[in-house]
Length: 390
Image 1: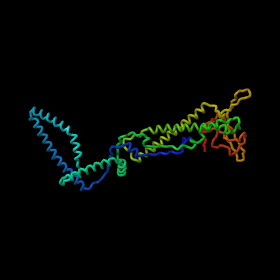
Image 2: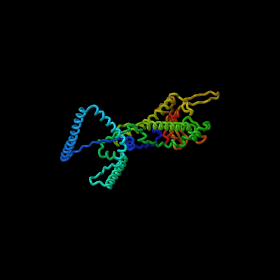
Image 3: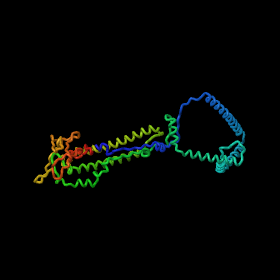
Image 4: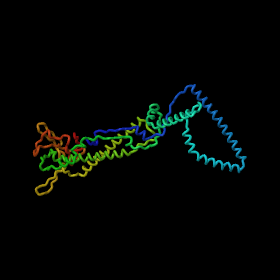
């Protein structure tokens, strides 16, 4: 049945991990790996550590001795000398702060990270400073290169231990996922246009043929096209509402997910979103059907109750009844078996008639004029919901 799929023929979705990574914007990534080092590397590393340790201790001892001597000298100095020293220190500090911007500027201009041991000449110094500036520019350009490419390289090498912390932990679905729907052609067909609805509603049923077992589609078709228009509009409303809610829902993660896990989670999110939308639409359809069944509405199609006006001008109500089985042969002969009354109609066992398109002003039955996929129920909605529109 068409509306079990909420008039959706095709669902197209696009998942972008690169957009997720750019929105996550990790400040750093960490990874670990196991490696067995050679014995020679271990020995040289230990000697290096011990050598560095002795070098550090040499300077540390000098610093400690200097601090002890300064402390002793401080205790033997008189208060006047200490006051003068403090004042001089403040003056020197203020002077240094005033000179700081100029000194920084000069340091930048004279920066030379390629200084060589060869004799310094103006040409050599200029060349080294020029290389320094080129190096800084290249480093800056490299820092602009997308970190996503670096992440991909690291993920290929360390897929199990790579972990990147996100700066932005909450990201809208619409920034990562794009879901579009291709609707059934009936949605844009002339059958739901206002012009067609006006045309089929303008027919005069008095001029149409009538039997108790078959219905002339010219008289009853307007109700079906109105229902079709109503449910197409209802489906569109559900799709738009669900899409708005989905787009503004947030994807929350404190770390950048591995690409396979990200795709797995987003696919599950899309499936849940579509299932929820279909369930919500089906709930609306069921409530419409329950409302019509419980309220026992007298339909304008004269199907669940026949309404007549006798010669005295009084209204007469007669229970609607349909045939249980119907057969029409290619030769035009037909047969009917039994009837069912609309007051005993159940959802699982509906009373149905067949829709025919009778030739003008006749009751002639022709096999080619029958609508097998569009039955008539006691209430138009009952027949409409089990039709196939094929």
